[in-house]
Amino acid sequence: MISDADGKQYPWYGLRNETQTLYGPTSRQTITVHMNDNFFPQVTWYVPYSKYDRKPRLTHIYRQQSFFTFLVAKDLATNQYHVLKTICWSMNLAIDVNPSQPLGRRARVKGPLEQDPPHVLECNDVILERCALRPPNANNSQTLIWRPTHGDPRIIVPPMETTVNMDKYLIITRDLDQTLMQPEI
Image (cartoon, rainbow, N blue to C red; front, side, top):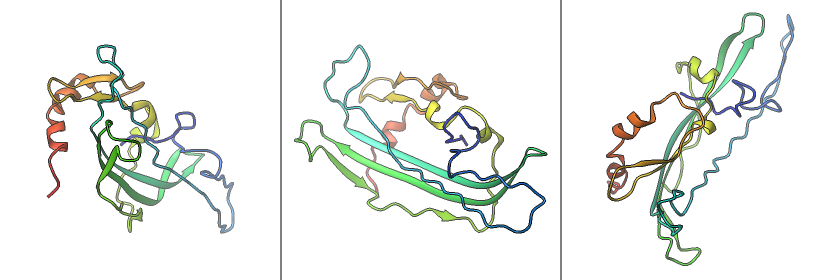
């Protein structure tokens, strides 16, 4: 589990509409918090590595992510967090790419064509891991790995922060590209 906070206000996703402060003791109140998270990935057409030319080489994109959004109350006196609600959502996407095709025909979504909607869990049995309350955050942990058709995968853009040994990760996921390219049943 890793935080999707902006890296400035751990562990909060943001500080505008995403947080409210109540001072107590207080009578029963209704407060509103808002969160808007947009899926906005960016990919490159070519391998940003000096040993490759800038010819477009992207042939496939596969992205699978799952998220938990926690509505929490923090007791400022004790620094304890209390999970009030847990929302679960995911994003799964497979796209075939042919950069030699004309604009508008270069990419084709393989699936799924519809995403599952977010849902509020009936009980808060997902543990808010302590590691999600501190660095690194998701954006600083992203990395770009080139998985060529032949040869070993290579880290092109390393993560700014990570808790994972990237050399071990490459070894463990060496055959991942073959798994990702299998047709759906």
